[in-house]
Length: 197
Image (cartoon, rainbow, N blue to C red; front, top):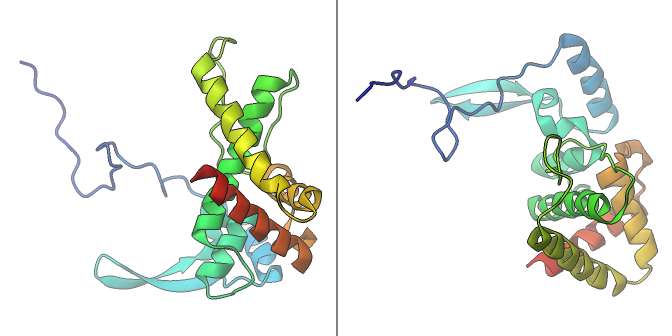
């Protein structure tokens, strides 16, 4: 029996035991400076204190992946105590819906849709055959119709869908989102939560 490498100690690991890559990618100083100006304009706190390993350290909001797009910033607002954001449950539902939009588009449309926000699991990535598993196709379509059904029960569903698509897929800036838009986004998230439960 061959002995493998010794396991590295004191490193963050995923649930499966693999070394976590989260936080290992660094952001350039220029990107951080630009992001901090945008965060300040969006009313977010730029630095905060957090306990890590038994000591208190200062963290920069701009280093959080959520600070790079509007949906993430809305969640950060709530985490920072600002009630003008969205909850974790709403965030998760909207991200799931955006992934569903991209997946459905890849199945039902010959044109490729590219989401402008960073956290999507795309269907049919490079290197795979063009034939998608029929069970997966059926599941995506079923989830899509369930979401559409819930959204269509809302008052002015087209407004809700327009804002959801703009924020979650097109990557609108926070400055483009009005109070009415934010209300519609929350309403849409609630409908998606109902559809995906």
